Each structure stands twice: as C-alpha cells, then as structure tokens.
Amino acid sequence: MESYNRIIDFIKEIYPGEGVIPLHAPHFFGKEKDYLNECIDSTFVSSVGPFVDRMERDLATYTGSRFCVAVVNGTSALHIALLLSGVKRGDGVITQAFSFIATSNAISYCGAQPFFVDIDEQTLGMSASALEHFFEGTEQREDGCYHVESGKKITACVPMHSFGMPVDILEIKRLCDHHRVVLIEDAAESIGSYHQGRHTGTLGKFGVFSFNGNKTITCGGGGAIITDDEELARRAKHITTQAKVPHPYEFYHDEIGFNYRCPNINAALLCAQLELIEQILMNKRETAGLYRNFFESEFPAIRFVSEGVDKKSNYWLNAILFQEEAQRENFIQLAIQQKVMVRPAWRPMHHLPMFQNAWRDGLVNTEKVYQTLVNLPSSVRV
Image (tube, rainbow, N blue to C red; front, side, top):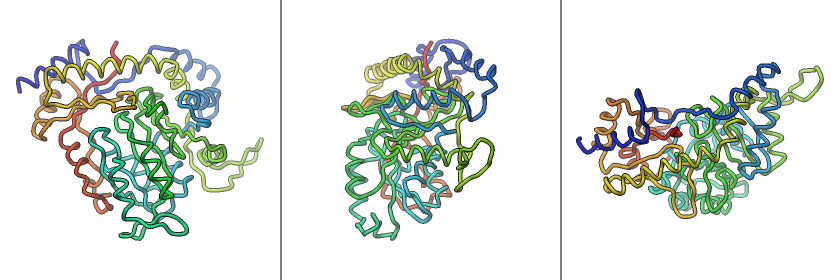
C-alpha cells in the first residue's frame, strides 16, 4: 500500500493543485467562446449553420478522408455506418467484448448480433490472430460470409482503437477483405492516432469518431462519420437528417431517417478545438512519456501501455496493467480516497445481461486485461 501512495504522489506532481484530479477534463484555451458567440449572434444554434459545414471539411482534411458527416454523437455514427454497410436484422457483426457499450448497442439497434473475438494484449484492441481464427469457422456463400456454427451471415467487423491505441488495422483489413466482410473502424477514442502514417478510421469503409466531453477534443456531444465513398457520404447525410428531400417549403421524406445531425453550436466548439489539436496531442504525449519513464524506473512490474511499432497513439487515456486483480482494486480504492480519479476498464460486454449469450471465443486476454487495467488521469496539463 505504501508503494501505491508513491504512484498517487507522482500523479499529484504532474497534476498539481487543490481538489479532485479528474480522469480527463475538457480544456478550452482557443477560440471556443468567440465561435459560440458567433452562433448565438447569428441565431444558428441548431443543426444548420456554417460551423457544421466547417467541422466536416476540417475533420476530413485532418484525417485524410474524402468526406465527413457530422452527427450528434459517436453511437449514432456507428449506427449509421452499420446500416449503410448493409447490416440487417439477424446478421452477425464481429467486434470485441473489451469496448465501451456503444459499439454493441449500435449493432443491436440494427437487429444484428455481436460476435466477440479476443483482443491483443499489446494494443488492447481486436486481435488479428483471433479474427483469423474466427474466420476459420466461416464459409463463403454466394451472398457473403457465413459463420458455420451459428448459421449467421457475418456482414461487418468493428474493431475499436481502445483508449486511442491503434489496432493492427492493416492485417484486420486484409482478413475482412479476403472474407468479404465490411470493415468499420470504431475510432471514437482515437482522433490523432495513426498506423503506418494512416489516420485511424481511414482504412475501413467507414470510420467513426466521438467528441464527448471527456475525449481528446470535444464539443460536449458530437460525433462524425468519415468515408472515401461519395455516394455513402451523401446517403449518410440524408438519413441523419430525417431523410428529408431538399425543398424550399415542402416536408417530404423518402425513407426512414434519423434525427442525428450535429448542432451548429456544438460544431463551433469542435472547430475551435481542432485548431489546437497538435498542441493538445503534444501535451498528452509528454504526459504519457512522464508516466512511462516513471513506471519503467520505479515500478517495472506494472506495465504502462505504450503504442507499438509503426503506431502513434493520441494517449487519450493512459493505462497501466497490474499483475493481479487484487492489486488493481487496492490501488483504485486508495486513489479515489485521495481524490485522484482513476478507473478500471469497461466491464466486458459478455458480462452484461444483454450480451451474455452472444457468441464469443475464449476471450483470454479480454478477461486478463479487464481484471488488471487501470486508467490514469490524462487531461491536458496546464
């Protein structure tokens, strides 16, 4: 317990000040207030306005994608990406049980079922070898890939870049392409992360982002869909605006749509945050370096999670792995008592009542990481 106090003291050294040290607080130090005032003065505070258009242009440029559609949050972005990828009721979608619940929820919104494959212990995201093993239990039919054991058509695969750590996305893409399964990247946590020079979210048919209040850059809520397919981008924009056919005054909707558009006032915040993203990322990488050096020198038995070869992480949430679950619990309780907000990983999806009967492999790494991982305070340091 004495050694854990040393960790807490170090966190207080890099986040000095009185009061609670949050896990990841938003930081506004650019033109956020100026742009919000522009929205208010113009009265364009809802889902139409120049900042929505600018947010889409700026995000497409930043990520290296051809098109971007701004939406109200990351979950709605996932939902639309799945629908436009052809996921239908009764289909199977490969994903990871080690994920925020939004991924599996979005699959469920489509009436589809998640199939959980294990994660890689290094990247904390979907394991390419586990995915390859999963595909060994599938067969190709005229209309696509089918899971032999369940008889389900496997339409899509949704790996998540956990805490901003890029998965081995190139190998995952190769496997998905070979088996005719649509790849959708859940890049909700990984704005500013790269694999072999490619921004996360740009390898699949779609990439999706979240700009929730605790993300690397934020607009309170908000999310985005990116794609290189012009027709899919047009469709995404159409069905996220209630599928309303443009007309000066008539209300005509040509299919079931969704009220998923991002308000202009939220987009204004993101435009200001995106102007400072390189400064934010540099600050967060410096913090990650401080943590890494600290644990390597003083606590080598506790693994600090680092980006891998050919990968660049945004280090949204810094993470450490204890050797045993009891050590994790003791540390979390001690930190919370001292007003240092740390947290365990999400409870794996198959532990939850809604997904406890979903197909899954052994999930050995998923269970191990869940039992031993702790996220550390990771806000921008001022």
